[in-house]
Amino acid sequence: MSNRSSISHFLLLEFADRRELQLLHFWLFLGIYLAALLRNGLIITTIACDHHVHAPMYFFLLNLSLLDLGSISTPLPKAMSNSLWDNRDIFYIGCAAQLLFILFFISAEFYLLTIMSYDRYMAICKPLHYGTLLGSRACVHMAAAAWGTGFLYSLLHTANTFLLPVCQGNALDQFFCELPHILKLSCSCSCLRELGLIMVTAFLIFGGFFFIVVSYVEIFRSVLRIPSEQGRYKAFSTFLPHLAVVSLFISTGMFSYLKPPSISSPSLDLVLSVLYSVVPPAVNPLIYSMRNQELKHSLRKWLGFFCSLPPVLSK
Image (cartoon, rainbow, N blue to C red; front, side, top):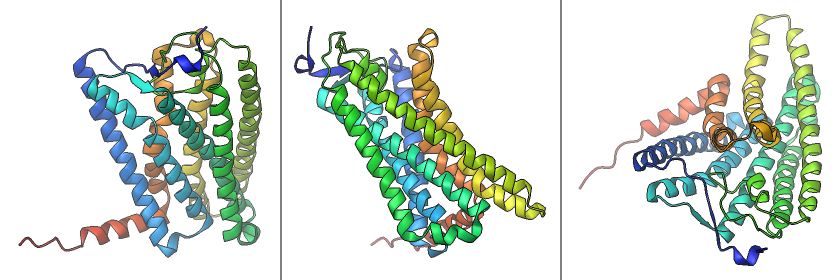
């Protein structure tokens, strides 16, 4: 049995074995990555600089964009580098750091999306109490709780995972260091501790998922009771983007981790991991900016401001 001290690096999954396809994957992921950086950067800049969008919903959206930038910046640059240089290696410490940050950003994003569902519930179902219960201090505390809980969760998982001895080789069937694929390499009975952590995590995830479902059931009931069509449209435009983001993120992530082993395959795992780790950070800003009129107006204003700047005069 080889333990963790004998493993100096892991081998990540290749997207393709042909050089042309590797370069195609590089350019594809580079385009997705740059689009995610631009879109999330625009939302962060707009919300931070425009006082018209300093409501709690936009504060949480700013935090979501920060988490999206972190979650897509953790696996994608390494995957692009491997495709460009035809390389599969990742150092042991690099794999541990990648797992830590991936778990941190993804778990913190889930907790933040749960908080955002509560924000939409209070705004639509209990508008008279919205300003009281969701003041600036309460919003900061809730966002800090999401970030802190995500970091604690990722730290516990990463520390426990990389203390396990490895005896199944060092090849990971994934393009980044994903928890289930690292655990497959372990041959220690101490993985029961990791299973215990996973069970606690599943309980927290299903608890948050149940809270989100209940919140949106109440939101739908309240919106359908609004007499005017314009009022219903405005209410729908404020929470449908969040519902779309939650559905995409949770459905792909839960299916990736909870699917039965009988339907598991490297290609399916690869597609699912891209859907929950790469696609949401790239499309979340697009979903919010398309449906939210205030944010769309602020984005137009800031884009118009930058486009109107005079060019630098050449000497």
